[in-house]
Image (cartoon, rainbow, N blue to C red; front, side, top):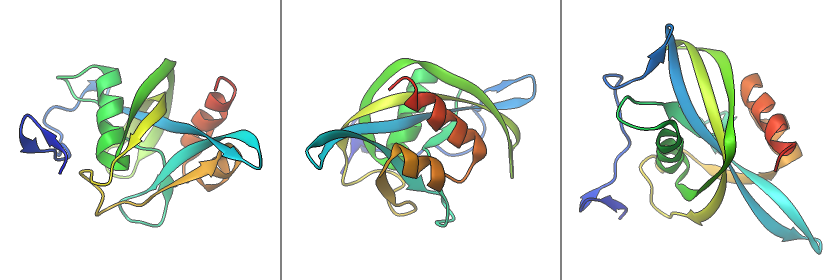
Length: 158
């Protein structure tokens, strides 16, 4: 079981520590990537996860909290939602402003994460599925326009 300080790692919940800027909820996440061999060539793949409702494919992201850096929030959310650990590469992408169904207007920042490890157990494994896709497939399958924009921007620098 995944542990932190000797206790089972659990996803953070609640909005008590949530960070805001000019009324926008601040969000951090990652575009998890890996390189694989396909048909004798090196190919780039992007990890997408199912939304909690289970019928949408999205990038891992969530609230940036007051007790952490933007980079730490992005890595934490990616671990909690997608069950992967890796290195953040390059500068942050964004901000991407979008309307959340339940949290009003949000401002998201994303990082490219080169995945080093896929965990068998992670905090939201019961609520989410994950899968690897080519960049083109990920852009087509990803539900939200702002995430498609982030993927297109990332593909220019990966």
